[in-house]
Structures are given as structure tokens and as C-alpha cells.
Length: 334
Image (cartoon, rainbow, N blue to C red; front, side, top):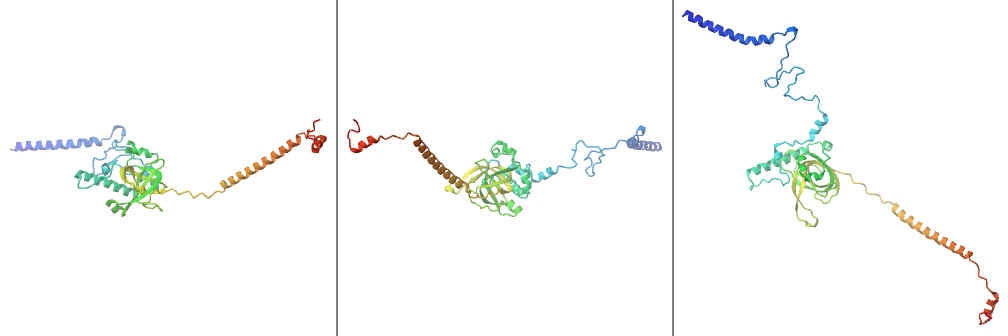
């Protein structure tokens, strides 16, 4: 029995010693200085190994998995981001380009209702976003190199939800009811829909804004005001368009829809003052013509007189003339 206990004790002691040796050997080797007085290399821990502690990164070491962050970002880029609409938001995927807004009636399925709500949310978000932007920054960073005709081609997909700048002629402005989401965020009951012909084109676009410049008469057609505006190209929409002239029936127009904050009206040129130069020109022409006629008349008369004076004067035979007076019928013939 005694030998068995001693043997068991020796086995346990040997096991304990081996365990301690296994644990201490890596520590001793890690702390052993290198030959030549060199210091041990700094230990580098990759970020993210311990989520409860910040990573320990020695100076001059960059984790290849972590992109370098610029020390100072361009202020212009920071400013520009303030007016750039986030195009990858999930509800923008439900926007039906080149079509009417989706309907949420009882005759459509649940999937269509969900898509319609997402599209409505995208519209509300864009209206609220545009309304809260700085107008001067919108003017500064709107793209000005996009032609209106580009929006009628497949190139328009590159400009969806981008901030675009256009100029044109304002035809009319209508007041439309604001959706519930816009009412809640902006505390407004109305939005304004402007119909505008971009400069150089005979087609319309529609611009949705929350603010109007002074002097705009709602519902009046053919305003013919020169305007400029900046708006987010939301979609290619199908809109009912009807004018009061001739009681034309409502037509569905396929028009680009932009969403902005407001638009600017170019100052109208002052009416030209009546000029006296046209009248003076006519009067001068008449006077000149009269002087020309008088001058020609005087010249012709003088020329006639000079011609007459240069001709030889006729010599009258006095005897023959006297015979004629005396009544000789022979005409002076002998």
C-alpha cells in the first residue's frame, strides 16, 4: 500500500511539473532579449481581436485590412454631401420609373400595396429632404451639364435622384395636397406643382416644390416667366395635363418629375422707352428728298437757260415781213 501511494504521488508531481514547464517555456523565450543588445520587436495586435478593448497599434504600423483615413477631408466634399441625396435607400427600389404612382386600392394584391407604400415613402422623404436643404448650396452643386433631352433616353437612369439644374419658361403653377408624411414632417397642407418648358425645348417637365417666390398666381396659364431651378430627378412620371383654352380634354403627359425647394424668377427687362429716332429718321428722309427735288429743279432750269443762250438767234428779213403785212399773197415770191 505504501509503495502504491508513493508511486501515485510521483506521477502527479511529474504531471504538475510538465504542465508548469509547458506554460513557462513560451514566456521565457518571449522575454529573452536578442543578442547584440537589440530590443524585442514591438508586439502588434490586429484590430478586432478583442471587441471589449481598443486595438493596440504601435506607431508606424497599419493594419492592411484597415483603409487609410485622410487626416483632413476636403471641405468642399463635406459641403457637397449636404445636398447629395442618398440614392441607395431601400424604398427607392419601389419607385416605378416611367409610369404613374402606384395605387393602394383594394383591387391590388398585398405585394403591390407594400410597393405603393414604399414609393410613397420615397416621395415623402425626397420632398422633406429637398425642403430642408440650403438653397444656395443646391445652386452651387447641382449638375449643369445634363441636357433636358437626356432625360428622355436610357441615360436618365444615370441621373435618377441626382440634383440637376435647368432654366426655362414657367407655364403655370398648381396647388396640390401634401401627403400625410409630408404634412407630419413639414407641418404644411400643400405642395406646388410647376409646369416648365426648359430653354430650347417644346416639352414640359413638372417640378414639385414646397415654397413659391412672390408674385406667382396659382392656376393661371401661360405665365411666360423666365425661371431657373434645382431639383432631384425623382422619376419619369405620367401626369394629367389640361388647359382651359378651348376646353381641351385632359391628356396624360409623359414628363420628368423633379423635386426641389423653390425656383427663381429672372427679373423682367424694363419696358423700353419710346425712341424719337425712328420719327427723326423719317422726317430727315422727307426733308432730304424735298431738298433733292428742289436742287434738281434749279439745276435743270439753269441748264435750260444756258442751252438757250448758246443757240444762234434767228435773223428776220424786214422787207419780207413788211410785204406779208401789206397783204401780198405771193408769200414774198417774185
